[in-house]
Length: 110
Picture 1 (tube, rainbow, N blue to C red):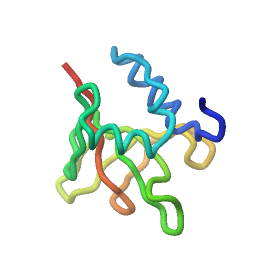
Picture 2: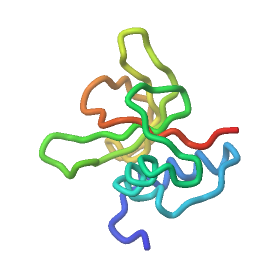
Picture 3: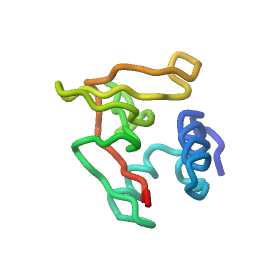
Picture 4: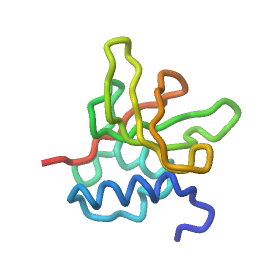
């Protein structure tokens, strides 16, 4: 069920499991993250303004409607965010981000 899935979603899933949420196969596929958050599946929600702990979804120019996912670790006053991401430049790292953000999927944190 994950053939062709990028490991950015698998990385996000692993982080969420470590934080106490249940593993979900659909977190490995970025379009599913957007669709399920917008549908409110299992308490997830979709937002245009970030909070720490949200998943940030990216739409790169010329790509699919959603291409990549990371986790917001800091929200800055200028509207930018700092993220932790897997599979960007073939590694896990922290990145300053302001552009190409499609929106934010908020997990059902307790």
